[in-house]
Image 1 (tube, helix red, strand yellow):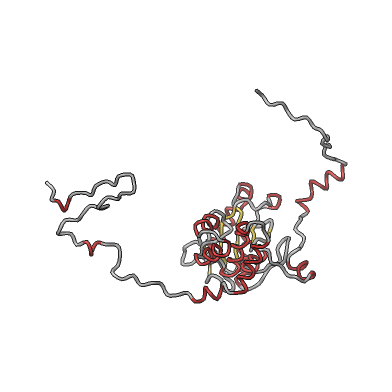
Image 2: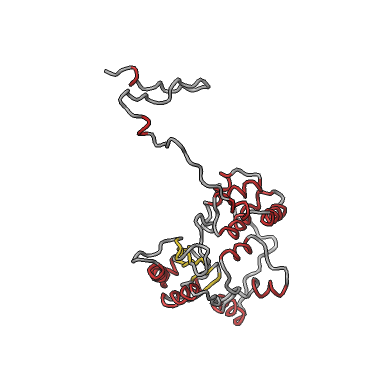
Length: 291
């Protein structure tokens, strides 16, 4: 037999009239205060004054410039998230709130995008982001071995470095964030690694270890193709759509050749042998649709 205090509350009925209780009352001998997961006094986290400085007038101006590039300002969300990463090295909750304010979106809408794409990091990144392609072809050619070797080499105390974990203090010189990557669109040059999205082709475990050791020493090895190596935050500023204004600096820092002999071999072979694709007729009939 239950006492009135132990009776469960009435199940709320549909409609605007709420039930009197939405919980089962505890018996008199239960110390509700002791078992409550809520502390008596919740101490608010310390104010992060640096956040206001990070997203100051200069960054707000750049965010406004991004929003003005599109007929609908919300279309600027992807580059604006890159802008946030160029400031903080990842997309923090404050960065999400910043984007929401700038584009008149809810934080939930911004979070939905930031958590969908793997290029937006939710934890602070190192000075360099090292992406090892472990998709099918690169994996068969040695991508899995490269990732395993780097994971062990960058780990500490016998513990391998995990996916999107950082060796060193995030953001500090020589720090490296390691990640698995899906297809990096360089199957003809696999296995491949990207450092801050620049290509290092035809890698081996030994060459990969030499590469990350050079990065940790503060060196910036020349990528196999593409622009000279920089750091993660600088690349994120470029991905946000902000480039050097001087033509010669732009050409040397950003617009470097990216093609490789292997990539162009098919086109060269076709040109040498006079192969051409058939010309599409102007009024090609469409196939009949089965009824």
